[in-house]
Image (cartoon, rainbow, N blue to C red; front, top):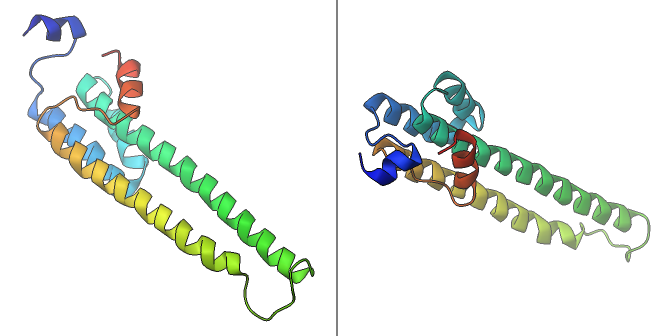
Length: 151
């Protein structure tokens, strides 16, 4: 072990079992949202490597879920206000649907699909890194996980 590795408290060699569980946490994040990484974290909490990777996947899914909920609340508020203003005479009477609906829905859909693409990319890339035994951290979220496990 090098001095930097010893000082950081990070073991130089990670077992195949730990690599598999850490990679599985990222892979399961894609399909099971936060449940898969949480279960892996709870089962393999004693391994700092697995905890680090499982916490990153778990934190990303929590942040992504909160952002999804906030986005849906804003989307539905805009749609409801648009429909209500059109039906109460604040807008010129017409039989056409609200224009805001046709502007907001594609934007909302693109943002949601972009978020899913980012989640899938993070899951695949960091699954591969974990399977190689790398202590690779997500942007911003990696430092949270590193601080919690004490690495």
